Length: 231
Image (cartoon, rainbow, N blue to C red; front, side, top):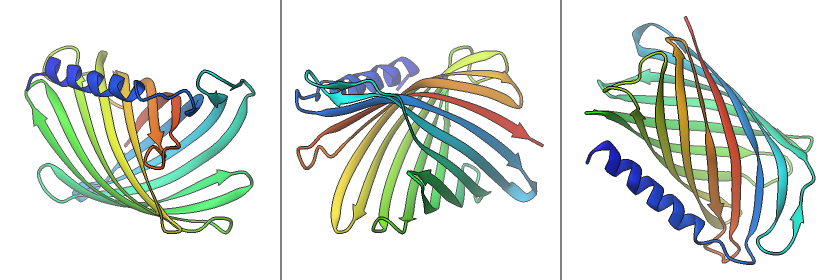
């Protein structure tokens, strides 16, 4: 499969999800800026420190009500340590602290990542489990899978001063108080490699959940991520 076929398939899937919008579906629109600091160490170890926040700009129900009141939602601070265990694979684990509505949630994260380098693009498979604990909510347990496709717009690989396209497709299974839910995420991004140690990505982070219980909710976040490599 060539890069054009991959992009076409991704956008077809994306618009199929948009077509699931019902007149009674709830939605929210907002901003999702993030800063990633990446440290590489000896023997294949690395550390990612990330801070990300959400700012709600609009919410409502399609074709009916609209609430354009701006609202700060939350801030996440996470630390993920990874270890290379094979030529193309890594295991990772870490901790996330979420600040929301005066409450602090604690999330423990485990990952397994496999990267495949193809001719003209790169595929990354990420398998996640995480557990979230809070004094105001029951524990939440999630099983996630994310497929990431990264396609350089010049040449066979992404080099400094070049643009690239990244497409994330993620499936998040969650269990909380015996209630199961599935969230699907489609995240098309345009990236620019500023230098060997700095790059930026922006695009739409689209999420849909609760459709299993016929109470579909759509989230549209304008994502802006800065990645900084620290020696």
